[in-house]
Image (cartoon, rainbow, N blue to C red; front, side, top):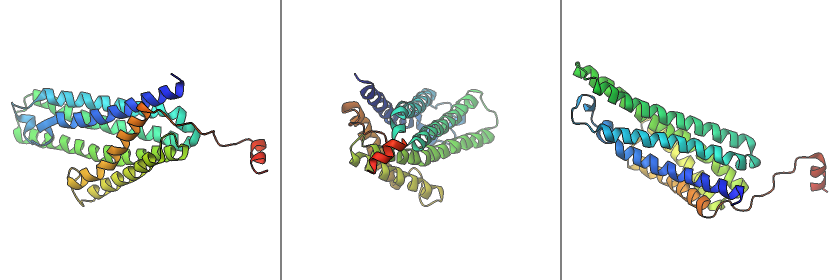
Length: 236
């Protein structure tokens, strides 16, 4: 397997892993996100929360892994954009981990057997609110910007078919706009409109992942000419 094909395969697996772990993590958390009394409840599912947290840690690893894997290839077509993509994915992963730690903190306080129920519920709701904000700033704002950066590079390089790159440009822009609308109270972040706005970026991630895994990158176009002699020849 040539190095470029291997890079595409690894990057595709990382991208696919982000989808599986993101969905699995949210489904595993269960009542900790919706039950304000979870922190003082004796019947909460700690195992589900731990599984969700573990999946989101894997999500953060996959987010960074996808960027680091793609960087040596995409930097040829725009060093600044490629570096911005890597930095953006690092920020996205950091936001995800902050959300994970906020929910794990609830488990720690819950196991301590708080005596002041009202205070404990307030703290629990505050930590869930922090997680909710990370869900807005990570999978909406950071993901939107990162998707547009990578899709721009993919459109320029044609490493994947341009319709897939265009889907990324549309999906990234739409989910960023949806996050902005949710931030200013147009509708709830977790809502039918929010879910609908996330569909194009989900389709982008699945399509680009499957293309890289199954097909690999398309023929890599040469880097732009940069030497004085080459530039002179290009205009002659």
